[in-house]
Amino acid sequence: MINELAQLKQNALKAIKEAGSLIGLEELEIKFLGRKSGELTNLMKGLKDLKDDVKKEVGKLANEVKTSIEDLLEQKKLDLTQVEIQGKLKEEEIDITQPALPKVEPGHFHPMTQIERDLAKLFSSMGFMVLDGPELESTHYSFEALNIPDTHPARESMDTFYIKGHPNWCMRPHTSPVQARAMQKYGAPLRAVVPGRCFRNEATDGSHDHTFYQLEGLIVDKDISVAHLIGVMKELLEGVLRRDDIEIRLRPGFFPFVEPGFELDMRCLVCGGKGCSACKHSGWVETLPCGLVHPEVIKAGGLDPKEWNGFAFGLGSLRLAMQKFGISDIRLMHGGDLRFLRQF
Image (tube, rainbow, N blue to C red; front, side):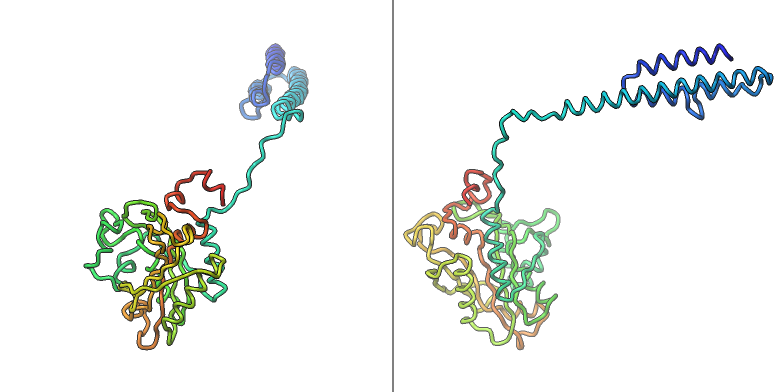
């Protein structure tokens, strides 16, 4: 056993000196000095079979072998740690003589985000709640609750994106479904706006896109008139566009969810009314379909139309952003061209 201890010591010291990493060193420590299956531990299991005088001598030699291995392990660990530290310092070294990195441009909000934030701030100051609604919506809230009959062209697949295999679900074509949802949840009186993304199966051009943004507005109270509607719309446009020379006109319009219904147009700010692609060369921009809430919609919201009435409007907030920033083509808003976005 004395010869075996000497051989173990020789093998261990040689392996430790040649170790090239802390992980490898740890494996050697387990191999030679492990408590359960280390080579020294296994060798000392035979100590019980030796005579007392030999056992004492072998035990002393075993302790010396263990101490020698532990001392060399500790020293090697310090050496390898230092080598590792120096390697990291070299790897992470910074050359202060190198030129500075290019200036990083600060981030900023997309023009559409700016408009939505301005709208939310404006309506909050007027006592409106700013609500949200699902983009994947049921046909009940998208159509039935808005008094839109089965025969209405808006319900055709050429206008609305239906979910394959689920005919009662669609990507919302407007933010109006939140009208009934809001009345059911909050009751009346009620003031709420709903900014959000909408989807329609449309061909794209300078003023139309299949994905766009709207802001739905709803007031439910008692004795609401068209005068209240016009006053709020005027305040809306002047507040967001930050100018008091906004010229508007109100035209009769038919929408199943309002009665009477109107089309509120504003004089195009991009061309000053001369005609451009943003206004379809008419000088006017269709901005706010609106009207007094239809009694059937009040019923769908769980309220009594004999007691409550109100007005609703659907603002094309993407078109409003185009007017504010003088953008003539709606497709630029979703193009992701940094040359365009850096202007705002």
